[in-house]
Length: 511
Image (cartoon, rainbow, N blue to C red; front, side, top):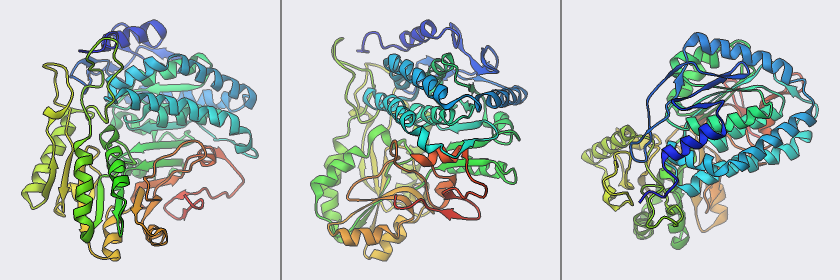
């Protein structure tokens, strides 16, 4: 049964009750020029959880987007002069409001992007706790620095609307900038709208708009008065943003996907690796730091397979709010649906093609293994799949699938290991599992990823931990810890920010 009180209608009713300025009975509003606006054309929305209709984004046209940016510029010119003590007090008040509405924000994430309750709660908590850490550290971080000349424009994917997008916006505001955010097209509208409504009540200069990239990009990327453009998403869209920025001189942060690889070389702790493999399926690998590729020493393949198959078969997936009894907590799942049924079809077609062209199916799960409500729509669900040696012509060979599909490549030499791990032209994270730490660290130095773990996975990280990417996985300034504040403030004349720029790459030290 669906856990009582958790239906989408229950969640939206609470949004209208708690933030009526941002939610009407029939639609969600945009926010610009310091107020909530009933404009744009609401697009239909559907949750991947079970196909239920949900609130869709109110899409603006290009002209309105330019007006919204100009209004944000005016807000920025006032906000950058607000004393730091007041900025800290207002951000702290906004964080208190987010805490007070935590369970509603979590429920919205469950419905809008299909995260299991535990993972959705972690997304909200990481946003609040991370921004709170910055409130305590901001004084030293902005010493000798000033806000940017214009607002920060944020365009991010749907998978982490709180811990990545809203978190970044709060830090940008804390550093003295007005902020603009584009609602992710595929999910997170109501969660992000509620969070922005709570922040706006505390006087934070937040603009939130919805629309297609083609309509909004000229204003949100090429707007001449912007101080910075921050993008999180895939390489294709990121490349378009980068091309649009060419010649403008805008500060930019473009986090793009990479083929994150896990290398297994001269290794023997299979019980440990089995647990790590199971954990790697969190949120169906729909995150930029997921590990979809395992590069394994051929002589260890039988041991790897003995650890891998039980781990992948133990993965739990299904409806995030399906319970046995009304008082039961939400189920403890590794993942729910993918973001849309179209994504499931795309991956299923890629898997079929890879196998037809010679890839060996190591594991092909079935949706019938999931936990669902009787008769519910399961079109957005995909069970785990693993393919040995995908053909080079397959997208699964060279690109991140963004779903629960693993590929395994076998190698015989260290040179082959490194070549296979570097096949994606740069990555955000990677890991080497190797019993000899000296060998592992020597190999790790040659992997083209921003963070390389030894016998442990790496992640985006929180608080003081830095984050970036090498090769095509990142363009512009690196973030995380002090670097996030440096990326959205002005320092000494001639300052070279750590980052991956067309004319230089500057690493901040060991990551």
